[in-house]
Length: 370
Image (cartoon, rainbow, N blue to C red; front, side, top):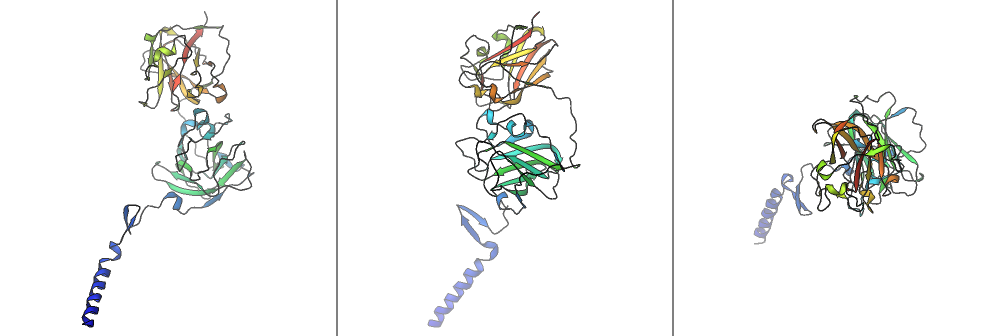
């Protein structure tokens, strides 16, 4: 009898082991079933060189790769004045700050170099007034040629000896040409970066194909004397806008109540907002001015993210200037753009590409006084 019992137990054990062959093992984890086949390795678990941030570096053997704001995307922005333009425009003294309350676990900066470049070094500048960079090796640089398949270039580690407002440089041996680069960090204490530069080894920078001439860049300013200019009168039938939120329609842009404003349509219907003015006849507009929303000037565009265009048929448009607003000008006063145009056109269009633009109180066009 005892022999029979042991025989039965042996048969059961053999059956269980046969059913649990390696090809059939499944493990339940967080509600999902993962078999033993190879799974994609997350970026933060991949092996890559460890690049330590170096201070006081001689960059004479490197060439800075030109980067403009339209080539940059970021994961989020706290407000327009703390946007991506601060990262790459030398004349801006601000910084890029992610949105708060913080929800994203991996803030990122994506850079499109337009053509593949072998980035041999990365420079990061922190804020002078606060240490809001990452800690240790909690950031990475990735590279891609299609913005979908990414290769980990290096883990980025900051020196404990650095000071606020000091550049840290990261060097990458044997760099490969890539069009896209992405910086990201999973440090929860990270909030902002002042500047970001990328470098190629001297003599290795590939020339970027030249396109049509860039339009004139006009920086908005305050306190302009309007005595040499004459305002172009328009009524609401001469205005068109990309959209609006009730009751803040196009009529608010030209009425006499500076407390009222035009507000874009929400949710947005496209990647830009615009206002078209029909001047009634071919007229050379040499100056325009805009008034930010009272009490919420930060809802204007920021940086060189707007264009002033002209047309005679509303089909073919000529860009007269790219219009930029600096943070110091967002005071609630009128902002003036002297575009210097002397060519007469009938239609004028202000196009705004800043996704953080929401409202504007007034828009006026001027010609030279006759």
